[in-house]
Image 1 (tube, rainbow, N blue to C red):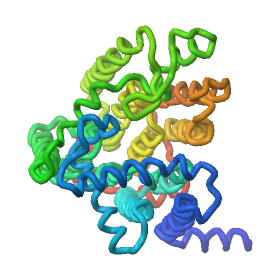
Image 2 (image 1 turned 45 degrees about the vertical axis):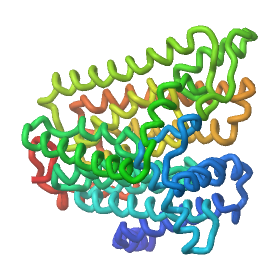
Image 3 (image 1 turned 90 degrees about the horizontal axis):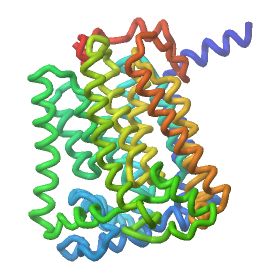
Image 4 (image 1 turned 90 degrees about the vertical axis):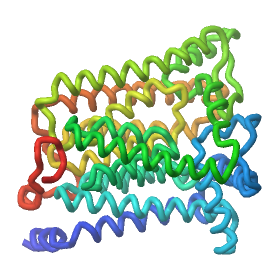
Length: 431
């Protein structure tokens, strides 16, 4: 009797309070580890980008121009310049160093993303996505605060929450101006002419305004295209694994080393495979589009996010570069999916957690083993890449599934969901 009373009392606590407590605890731990106030053996490695590279770029950008084309590590669209410059001014205002200001900015961005996911959960009555986000981001590690991928996650969360197709497109365009991948959100827009045109117009407007405005103020913004064209196969990518394996077996025809701002594999056939992966990305997206058209009669509300999720997973599997921070991309899309009552991605979400955990084992924990060709490093990255392919297959299958997937995630109450769920039209947008 006492246990049942306690459970009823706990059920009466608003889920917003659980989310707030979870965010405070997990993000405090991340911040303390990132700043060195909590034990973190890999802090120097994780923070090298923000402490050395980003701060150097901020100094160059403050001088009124982009990094020169000789700096091949600058591989971001022009709008990323503001991500580097803002912490520089915050650092002076707060009286802290550049890295600490950057961490605090990303912490604020993560808070805003979490708030948007909470609003999405309240709209649809499903809270699994919020708690998925709260749990997976700490699993990636303190590195999340030392990269600016959380900004693209914020733009995607805003896209999902927006009721206006035009405004949603603007949010997606902002994210695409920072890192191109948020453009996949356009694939989930229902194929209804007016809605699609408004969303695309918003994308173009948001991306163009930010990019053009940046390039007017700072010359040299197209240099990143030169650096991007020169990229090969980064050692953590799926396509690089066979070459790493051949190197490990004793062949001296394939080696690894620093190139284009990352650790890449080099040797016979590498450039050809790197070029092939671009075509495979395009082929995968075309196949997904054809599949969605073929099974359009099965469209559900969750397709608005499930289609972009599958598209992103295709891009990750076929990417020449598979940096660990890319897991934030998949995490925010999966979190948004889990907020929809009719999603079919519960199994894929579980597998994605395993992918994130293996990614953390790969970087930063076992990255030096991978670079040195140690068996443990190769085993971890092979498991991670295989698991990522499985997530893609399971997510694609779930997209087309007719079976209703009951969301048994944390904080979900089926009865409450039935009472609070909004009425939606067949296109997947609230009516």
